[in-house]
Image 1 (cartoon, helix red, strand yellow):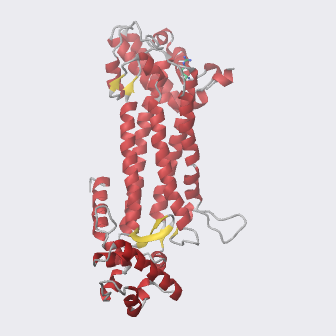
Image 2 (tube, protein in one colour; image 1 turned 120 degrees about the vertical axis):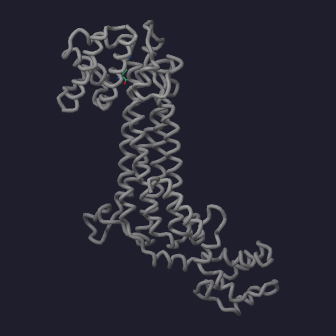
Image 3 (tube, protein in one colour; image 1 turned 90 degrees about the vertical axis):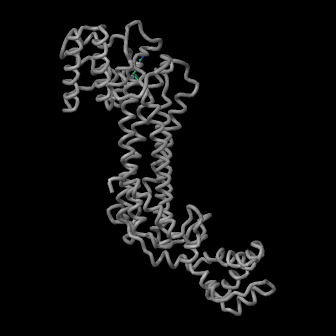
Amino acid sequence: MERFNASISVDQRLCLQDIRGSQAHAAMLARQGVIPAADAEAIIKGLEQVLSEIQAGEMAWTDSLEDIHTHVEARLKELIGEPAGRLHTGRSRNDQVATDLRLWVMQAGRELDTALRDYQRSLVGLAQDHAETIMPGYTHLQRAQPVLLAHHLLAYVEMAWRDRARLADCLGRAAVLPLGAAALAGTSFDLDPASVAQDLGFQGVFANSLDAVSDRDFALEFLFVLSLIQVHLSRLAEELVLWSSQEFGFITLSDAFATGSSIMPQKKNPDAAELVRGKSGRVVGGLVGLLVVLKALPLAYNKDLQEDKEPVFDAFDTVLDSLLVMAPMLASLHVDQARMGRAVEEGFLNATELADFLAARGVPFRQAHEVAGQAVRLAEERACALQDLSDEDYAALCQGLEVEPGPELKQALEPRRAVDRRTSPGGTARPNVKKALKEARKRLWPEG
Ligand code: ARG
């Protein structure tokens, strides 16, 4: 039972938050005249000592003391004696642990935001280098229309902006202090939670004591934010795996992020990208796991809630590491522009251009689409590109239509032209992408 019941192996990670929370609580108790000021002073100093012992690795963790809260209090008692017994006045481990975990999430959230920003900077740096590089854009993983590589990369920057906004939103709700709810019903002592909230950097104070001790929405929301970040990373990771394959050959990953095979000497495996892709399983698993812990859980505190920390810690570690690996992997990869360019030439990616060209000259789009399809079949037969069909071919294809496909047609079929014509808002035309890059730079390097 002792081993089963103990959470110290996991929640020792909350030691800093636990001690800061206790110090703020003790100071408030003294301000309110609930405990003598001298005792509060001894508690606060003693707790500082406990913290430095833990940080020095001197704390002896034991399952018999169950969790971080009892460990800290027991050590405090050894250090300062009787006044330690006043610390837990008007408080319960139920509101204490909720406070600790919220504080931890608030700090973790700040680190996560910085890592997301650095990942965005990496993407923008690479996009910057490829503001002119053309690649096939895909739908159904079939070559569809030419786009700029920078445009493709900036799509991931957008995802990360949303991730950061979602994170900020969730951190706002995490920053609500539950301390003062005590076990579940509140307390008879004259507490001042608002001042504790201010001390600890919370933005507000709980409204309902039952909700305060049993609410783990903030942990779930944080896990969802983490899950979606990892899912976004997994999509990019998948593209890196594909692009670095011999079938695509679009990129070469730096040796620092790839490994050889123990049996096949020719292999270079994109392990880092594969791991980022694969680790989405554990992050999403953590979210689903905690959702199920909360499902049908009656009010208020239940020991089930002790299961909240492990998934939060693990998901955070996983996502942070993934971001820390992704950023330099992007910065160090090599793009084979010629190979990307050939892929654009090969797949009739300009078939839409042909249809648009005819439609812009009065042919109903459906009919233009039909003619472009015939042109593709003819080019396939001839094993050539659309722009390599002869003027006579085009004259024949356009028979009965009111257009004369002159030399402008061949020009329109140029991939670069196709890109530059996509001038609609948010499209891949070079001026659009240059503008988007400039805006991204302004937002990501505000100091210039
Ligand atoms: N270790 C516990 C947890 O993580 C702390 C709260 C214990 N509360 C209780 N009433 N036993 O949830």
